[in-house]
Length: 233
Image (cartoon, rainbow, N blue to C red; front, side):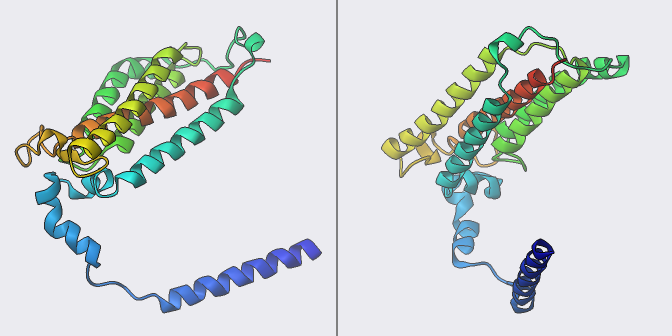
């Protein structure tokens, strides 16, 4: 009884707080000062047609670095809890029979999914997308492979190498920006190029490629660990 009363009081307090926030909310009709600066100067300074995603890796590059770090820590913790004991690795993975349709669809779609994921993060400076989106798309290809063949053995060494190299490469590009340009992750270390072209916006396509590969590898590693944890008793 006491527990229910405490929960009810907490819910009422939250309801009052959110009601006050809702009543005091005023819609913003104009851009803030920093948003105006991005809108007026972003394309000229960054050289990218997709200003939104470019802000993420240039003006707010440290935020993105923090997000990548958080994803790495989360993936490491999840992998730790899903890691199998050495004497359990020989056991079969629990699975149900997959259909011929799923297997055929996987064989056809997985390469397309991988290519589309690469396209999304390479073209992140031109079209909606970027490293996180492209990496997540690549991981869905790995998920489809596992669904089609639950006993598939994924080469974890490749995943670890891709994750490590892309993470180091991301930081190295940031350091080069600090040394050769105006600051950490400054994209002008390679020249901005022609606005709207594939090879434009300086180092942003390179940065997005590293982020996309790292995100894809980390999520794929989680899926692989989860797959191995689903074994027969």
